[in-house]
Amino acid sequence: MTRYSLGAIVLHWLIAFALAFELALGFAMPRGVEGFALFQLHKSVGISILLLTVLRLGWRLAHPRPAPLESGWAHRMAHAVHVGFYLFMLLAPLTGWALVSTAPIKVPTLVFGTLPLPHLPLADSLNPIVEEAHELLAWFGIALFLLHVAGAVRHEILLRDRLLERMAPGGSRPLGAALALGVLALGIGAFLSIGGAKSGREEPENVATAPVTDSPIAEQTPEASPSAEETSPAASETPAPIPTWTISPGGRLAFKVGNGDAGVVEGSFSKWQGAIAFDPERPETADIRITVDLASASVGDSTQDGMLAGDEFFAVSRFSKAVFTARSARRTGTDRYTASGTLQLKGASKPQTISFRLTGSGLARKVQGSATVARAAFGVGEGAAAEGLDPNVTVNFSFDAKGTLPAE
Ligand code: HEM
Ligand code: HEM
Image (cartoon, helix red, strand yellow):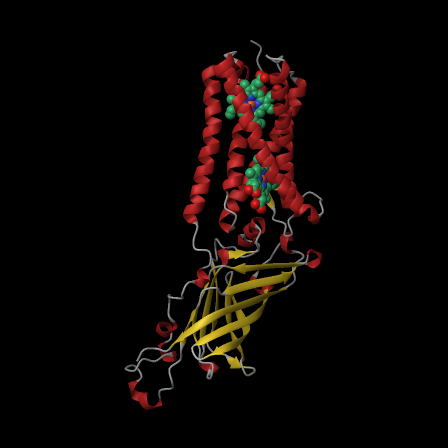
């Protein structure tokens, strides 16, 4: 029986394995900062598929395929699936490439960590269209895959015409069958393991909503919230105790920065905590410590979130937290305050002021405030990806807080 040339066979199976993995990866990769490395892998494998496909089409022109075994509807259908596959193999990577090239913030792509992939010169307004097209093409690819495998099974089991041998290395049917099962196993296995790892890693979405339990201020700064025994020598002059505050569920810590013609980039942190000792009547005794989990930063777009985690922005692999501390505050209006302290971010420690407004009364208050952070001082937003970003980032926060007075 006439067979496909060895080059065509090698490329067929190489691309089949790569595509099964790529589809599984695309659907299963986590859409947050934790998926950054998998995203880079997705882009690298996708671009490799594009190159292999160009090679394969060139090979096909130079090496004619064996004559079809069938004619009529079955042949036409098989032919349509093959043409569909070639279109899918070209268009899926191209739309993926267009997708990363039109994202509002450009994430640099390094193919397998080495070769920089330039961005295609496309208008950013195309982003939603190519994103939709990329996902639709993926489903189209899966449909073709199912039809193609059904066709192969039909030949193998119903027609028993040894079609598989045409596409098997050395014409070996067992080898062909093993490769086919290998492709399916890789696709399903990769989907389950990447998807499974993702759900295993998932943490509560908004930890800012959890009560703040770690490092209560009273322990860190005994002088700010004295216990009766420790302060006995000056007991008669002991000032009224300072309440410590627990952040209630539903708080928000957001940021925004201008991005030239592309508008404004807005996002938020889903995980942050505060240890706050504060008496609205004596703001000078304040002791504030806010800890922000930088890996929880999101602008609502997984591609850009991956970049936020990278070295040019937060470098979360080296600096996972930002910490703001202030040891006193100042009243600037009836219910308005500022606190000047220190912001530790990405290895730098710089003076930082925040302002806020308190509403409510007694031990149930609402806090709303903001800060302007000069990002260059912390090396946040370096390189080409951040070129259009304004130097100042506005941080806004709002949360409800419940006060507790230290026990006697
Ligand atoms: C996993 C199970 C797979 C099996 C058992 C299989 C089997 C085969 C067989 C037997 C042929 C030759 C058909 C003929 O001689 O007329 C073929 C051709 C082809 N297969 Fe697959 N295949 C598999 C996966 C894939 C995948 C994932 C792709 C995606 C790109 C693919 C793309 C193609 C294309 C485009 C052709 C036509 C080659 C040409 O004539 O240029 N196959 N396949
Ligand atoms: C044959 C090649 C490719 C296949 C089969 C493929 C498949 C997929 C699939 C199934 C998804 C998930 C769709 C969804 O649930 O929304 C996806 C997402 C994505 N792909 Fe690909 N892809 C390919 C190539 C590429 C390439 C070359 C790039 C970039 C250079 C790329 C970039 C992306 C991006 C950025 C997303 C995430 C979209 C989002 O959720 O925001 N892909 N891909």
